[in-house]
Image 1 (cartoon, rainbow, N blue to C red):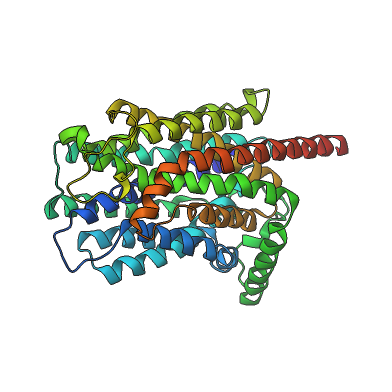
Image 2 (image 1 turned 120 degrees about the vertical axis):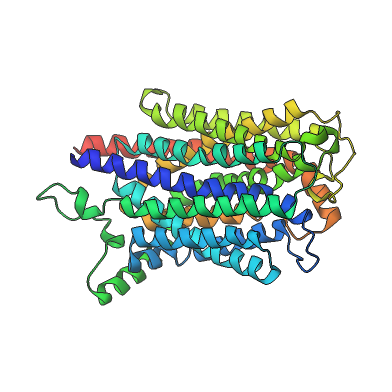
Length: 451
């Protein structure tokens, strides 16, 4: 197998591994609050919203040290260990205990920071200027298949059910735990960097994450990675990137932890309300995969560059958020186990709810495929610190949705989320992405002239 073939093989394995792990984790996050609401065990007092808040808060903080951790143990082993912690978090739902639930939330926050930092390094090491767009699209499309498989199972298993029994819960989460472990094991198939180098090639300048036989060298690389993270955080490009990244964090938390719960609480959807949570996840996945395929794999054929893709993403999200605003009752996120019979500005429609799910996924893919491509191109030599900052800011963005459990605040935050997002964050995010694309184009032109 040629060097390029090995690199493409690594990208595919990386994407498939993430697909398995996030088939389990995203399905878990999508149904967590609904399952907790239906728990008969009065000793359990956890909250899916609080858990998600802890995860993204810890993830943000942990990204300050994740490049150093990856530098010490290596990207491949980092992803394996992180995958184990993802599996442990999901396994907690088999027999829930409050202390174990929140402890696992903290651990998976740390693991997520390390996992995504290592992923960014692996993606960049196996790409160059000509293949980063294609490889980002392949990875993103494979990752988003995770929204299809897990949610399809939930849709079929919970169809017609208005209450989630203990047996139903255990069956689902045992299956999800096994799926997550399969993805973790697949990381071992990734060829190490030295296996993909052509004979005689010099060491890459991105050696900051390479495995070193010297403990002293590893510590020096760890310190260098931390310093580089701090330095990159204040560059013009990264500050522009942070605006768009924060927006994607907010949207990610909304459709992965809030929107499914809202759908499952609307009694006017009838006996399908619980299974519609899975169907919503499927439509989000379809939108993500479609966007990843069109804007990632066909990136070279889109002559006008990234600007139209970003603008399409913001337009799609405008439509999605305002439709959700009109379709979903304000108290849907915090409705009791019996659900809610309230109506917003229109009679809740299953068709509109599923359309919004698709639009949320499509818009999200417009932003993320372009962000990954820009990161891989601008920071090919500092991929680990760059991707760590990316996840740090994304985690901060996710905290804009408050999961403290205050009922009044929840109603207001949900009711005005579309207005707040579209007027105060989404438009600046798209403007920043467009300006950043111009900077990328200038750098490419300069490099070509230099050659």
